[in-house]
Image (cartoon, rainbow, N blue to C red):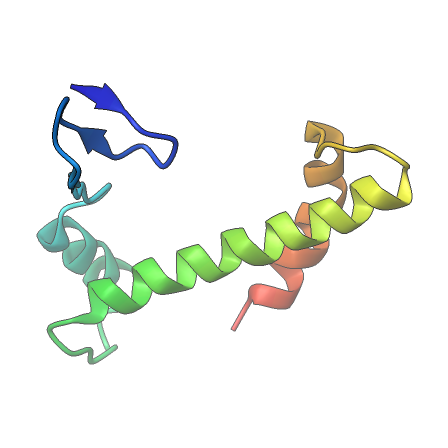
Length: 96
C-alpha cells in the first residue's frame, strides 16, 4: 500500500483509493466536553459534525489570511510567522 497525495491509502494495482476516516476526538468525549463547559446548552445528536465543520472553516479562514499575509511580504510560501501574525485577528473574529 502507498499513501497518495491527499493522504488516502491506495492499494497497489487498484484504481480505487482506500479512504480511512479518523475522528480526532470521539463523539462521546466531545459531547461530555460540551456539557462540562456549557451544561445549560441544548444540542442535537449530530452536533459533533457541526463542531468539525466549524473547525474546518476556522482553519480555512486562517490559511487564507496567512496566505494573504505571505503575499504581502513577498513570500511564495506561508511561513509560521505569517500564521502567528493573523491568528489573533482570526480568533477575535471567530468568537461567538
